[in-house]
Amino acid sequence: MKRFRAGAVIFLLALAGAASANAQDVSQVEKEHALQYLESTKKGVLEATKGLSDAQWNFKPAPDRWSVAQVIEHLAAAEDMLRGLTQEQVMKSPAVAVRDETETKKADEGVLAMVPDRSHKVQAPEPLQPTNRFGSPAAAQKHFVESRATTEEFLKSATGLRAHLADSPMGKLDGYEWVLLIAAHSERHTKQMLEVKADPNFPKS
Image (tube, rainbow, N blue to C red):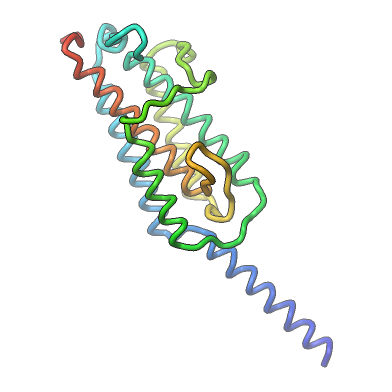
C-alpha cells in the first residue's frame, strides 16, 4: 500500500511539473503573432532598401547620422547578436516560477510600444556600430534576410519561452519577449531609414 501511495505521489508530482512547464510556454496563437511580426518587419526593411543606388545607400543627412547602408549593416549584425543572446543566455538561464498573465502581457506590450519608438534616441553599443563588416549594403541586406530566417526557425522550435528571463534595458524579459524585441528593433530602424530617405537632400537616383 505504501509503495502504491509513493508511486501515486511521484506520478502526481510529474503531472504538476508538466503542467507548470506548459504554463510557461507560449500558445500557438502567440507564436503565430510573433512570426507574423518577424515577417512584416522583415518586409518593411526590404521595402525601405529596395532598388537603391550607391549614392542613395551612402547618403548621410548629417555627419553624425547613419546612412541607409550603415543602418542595414547594424540590423544584420544586431539580428545575429540578439538571437544569439536569446538562445545562449536567456534560454539557458534557470527556469523561473510561472509568471502572472497580467505581468507577461504588460511586458509584451511594453516591448512592442517602446522599442520602435524613435522619440527616444539610443546609442548603439560598440560591437554593433557600422564598420562595413559585410563588404557592401547588398551583402548586409542578404545577411539580414538569412539571419531573420534563422530567428524564425528558432521561434518555431523553441519550448519554454516564458520559463526563462534575462535582464534587458527594459527590465527582465522572457524568451518570447526577446523575440518580440528582435522584430521591434528592425521596425525601429526601418523608421530610421525612412527618415533618411525623407531628407530633402536625399539623392533622387
